[in-house]
Length: 89
Length: 404
Image (cartoon, rainbow over all chains, first blue to last red; front, side, top):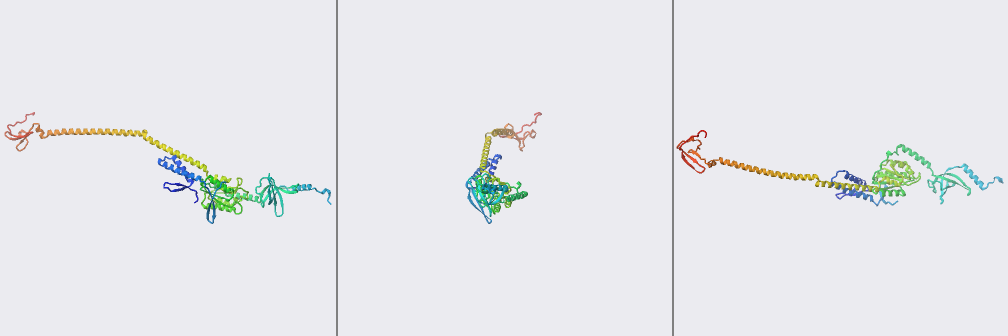
């Protein structure tokens, strides 16, 4: 797959790929939970930390400077993709 | 020899020619092929329209409306104008007022016909249109690989919303085979599973140039597309059937990005706002817990409990004391009673009786004497005192007096 994913580190030190949409929406969920719910203190800290990670990941995905245009050519039934730089227009 | 009155001057003749032409040829449409085109520095356009057998000079003054098609060498065009005679030069020319490509009328008729047919099928209905994804993960662009359109589009997307990947499936956007290429590109992107949304489009041009986006094969491909399609064909004034069929129409290439993807500036603001909410919530939660703990430690309720614990402790101590006291009392009582009983017992025991001065009298057969009737004078008896004893003989015997 060619989706653009951000990477988020989990407790067991593996990296999980997350889409911008999911990271952004999860961040909103966390803000809501902390505002509305009667959350235990420890859970509040966990949510806060998760929120920190998500913010970093979102920022990183929005900052991507090197942006490529992928040019598709189709040979028979195969898709072939070639990358090229995007210039200021 | 000619008659002197019938001889024309050159001016008179030229004037006559002009008059004849003016009267018999009003504004007319003329078709021909362009050659010798010049755009003069004055802004006037000079060219020749010709066909296989003849040619005519043309001029289009700069004050005329801009020609909608390029008047270029070899182009077949249709012009509307008037034949005029330039007396000075003895030439006649076509004073062109407007220019059309050949077959424009036919194209327009075809456009209307197809448009009506598709409208009747409900192809343009709002209800048919799919909504765009809020956060596309990838965008597929169908356009010419050269030209301003792809540059504007890719720059627009990459600056507005970097997380979305950009794909270009290059096609011919006009000329033979272009409609088929565009339709195939739409199919391919649907099959590829690479993108979430498709953009089709091209830069500005004449009705002929944009014609591919009016062809039925492209319209059908847009209808069949499972992915939503944004159409950005030509300028805002050019509305093609693709524009009407697509799920969203962008009036210009720069408008495409703002329709297709969110703005990273707004997203960053939104993220910051969420960050603020999270921080405030956490602070509130911490404050709340701190207060609760303080309340417990120094609070009224806590004090009551502490007091109560103290009270209970005091009470327990008191009770213990009382219990001790009562136990001791009980013991003392018991001991006293025991003592009393013991004394009584002692007093009641034979030894006690003897200690009080009584003696025990027994007959020789061992029987204790209680009644004087049991003994006779002269009988031997045994006496026991508190200490020691004796043997005695009875001297005399008597009974108790009444009342003793």
